[in-house]
Length: 258
Image (tube, rainbow, N blue to C red; front, side):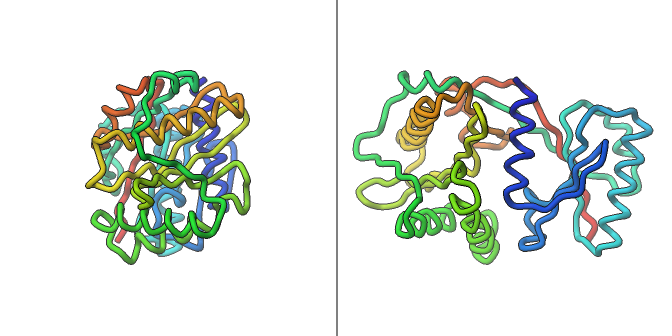
């Protein structure tokens, strides 16, 4: 099951990124937004020896320096000892993320907040509302310039290149108060970039969005829906209460080359 989720991550990234692939890595790069971490990284596909791991890291550092990149981001789904990271020429920041999944049938146990409406952004009007909600939700953390560039880059892909990848917008009293990406990939659904504006958090709106997505997953006969969360994600407890379970981890190494 975990392999399905990790493979779905590759499908998702390829919606936005060009890539180079060999037996050990996939190097993703998005020339339209090269400073966006999530679409510019190198995935080590399988568990490798310590020697091969170090060789890959050194090769990717050299490649990024040659292109005058300001960062290198590495992802992998296997454990590695900290001592090997501390001996690299550039010591990375290490972060861990949890894969969490749920069965669509769990939607029956979730409640919908009265007055909450979730719409798929298939019209320009709803897409515009979703873009504005995303900018509001992310400006404090990213700055308004990057928040705008980020969501406009994403909006180039929503339901245009792949009808199975869409933005969903959460409304309350006709006001867009949140948004979420949802991708259908064979019998798997992926949730990404799930935001509810601060003033509306912990009031049932996030649960309402999840219920809507799980019901759509049932209609499309999906087996599981998953998302990835980190230890600082304020919504992590909500996911657990809604029935999400942890199934695995991924590790990120971030090298500041600036």
